[in-house]
Length: 322
Image (cartoon, rainbow, N blue to C red):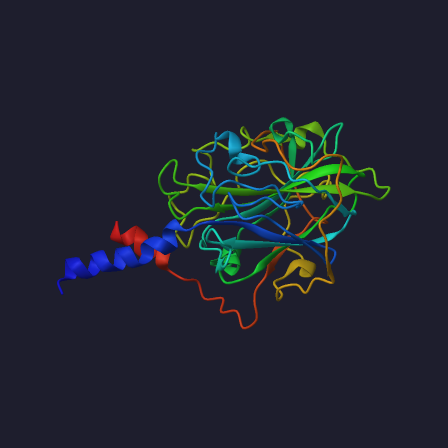
């Protein structure tokens, strides 16, 4: 076998890996599990807005960048509270049986109020988002690597957030091709919440952004020619973490309550409650512009047992081969 034919076989072997993408299969809130729907599949009651495909949203101006490709309204809304603990399960392949396939890029979380309605009826193209967390690297390893090895993403809702109806936008950005403008891949997912309590925290207008509008293809953190340079410092795209989360601070390091742990064991399962009607509609895109910093809303990952934190290098092989 010649060297060139060996290379061709290797490239065909890695194509399923690099071409497969994924979605949010499940969310747990304070121990209660909520299942999502397969992209483009049969729709069952859920709190997670269903997308049409496992592929990425591109470019950054795509109207689907707010909640995922052709996202549709979910029929249910989950109850939560200030400080609620969420676990978010990202998976790969169209049937959700594989691990998340990408390793390189940030994990971010945004929220938006569903104004004057419940979130099962809210058109997310009207949403104004504020960032509640951003997570990049631990030393030389992206936290997204842990998701690719079976981890769940942990997220704590802001402890001072006012009661109301909110969309939670959880997002992975894959940067394996971000050395070229337009190469970043966006994977947002929206979960519908009704938050109780008696707090009064509201994000100021300066902290809000829209999607599309919050990102552009040439912004640092989206176009990143140094993504594989060990000496470079990653700059998160979009606004900083909202001052609602941690007034007067800059974006903090992950705190001890969100360090990686094993996958959750939900205490119960639930379909959530109807906010008024059921399924339907488009949950495509929108947001605004803003700033941020963070503390009480923390996001990290839960690796599976015996997790090997060694960073895989398939993306680097791909970069060298082409």
